[in-house]
Length: 587
Picture 1: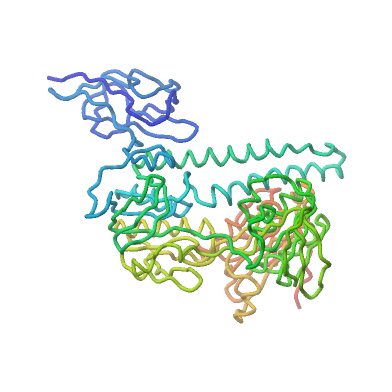
Picture 2 (picture 1 turned 90 degrees about the horizontal axis):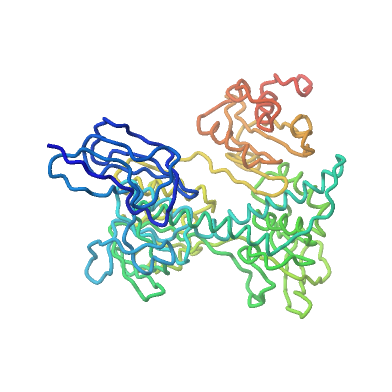
């Protein structure tokens, strides 16, 4: 005898009236427990609702396009005699979490057996919820581990999402729209001077960040990751004390992943108590648009923010200690960027530094030193962008036995293990380059190793991108490194002035360069400067990982006319088969 039971939408958190986008079964289908029945989608997440029991689908009570909430009837199921009538358990479901987690993700504590003296226990604790931390937590959860994710701030995402990569790219997009509108006047289209509503621009940027952080909270909830807000410090190799808004909570663990990132480096002796001296976080807060802005540091962060403030109307001055901007990149890649911003900015001082900043009622008075010593100047705001330093010294790592070097870095092996076998480290804290995409890759290696998988960090290259205007991107061996290492290489550089697509968008200043082994013609490295260089570099990362040579790239048909053709043209130059340029035959 069969019992007919109602299968309903379970507790799916804050989601209400969400769309049914797939119905995965039909009347007459036999389903097992946990068989997915429908797929629903909100603006933040897509999730499947599985069956809580085995049986045969008797009747569907919804269709694609319907809107459902908790308690909505999905179907009638003919289950075995005496079967209960349970609600379906969603994949993602609502985990119980603590009050401390409410601010971070709106959840309550998963009941787990805590070690003596601990308030809760986790198989894996992840310390830090930036891109590396939340990726590690989510991947480990997907592999069946019980996770506690500790984050000092009220939202997940770390510096990158809240006050770095994401908000800066939003403002850089706004800046690009402004500059492109200006430059269209040369093509006969004039828009007039833009009216910039700083409050509205800031709100738009903040809303974008808020949407992503809420999405992360939902993903944590769906995976039953316990989120604990507070500052965590080791008490032993098996326990962390977390200073939460509700007091100290102790978390015992089997394994820990350190993902604490880095913080802004500072020059000693500057008046940091003065709000007019900003770090990148304050610059992204966009309090106002200063009449004159001094950027200390001509690296990626400093130049990205300079691009934003220049487009929004500030007069920008950049000072850099080295003899060139973005010192890590080849000079031929930086040249088009330098040429463009030299025309737009008030000044760029190389081989120079700021010796002193004095607060005055009308601004910050800067005194310079260097080969070409500028006069003292007054600035309305100053941005400090001289790099970042790892947070390894802030964890009480010595109480866990974790080795931290003098700079704050934690050494790891290819599985991301520290010198303490049950403690791993990922991201900025375990070495250069300090990039989110490195951290997320390392995060998966650590999580998979902990879950018993065979995994190792063995990437052949980690691409770098400056989201300036024009963008600069490079991967693999740089030409500077090749010369220093005595590598027998050759190069092919394709000028974007010969690209129909680059000419059509008025941005012919770009360059695509390939470095390759002279004998085998296998790719060794690449660099691109130009519009969307950061999007174009990925093809060449893949080429390097696959051991591609110039023929592999030059014989792969690329769409025309596109900027993606430029690596193809550079490869053709290496092969001597290019027809879009005339290259004299080598003797």
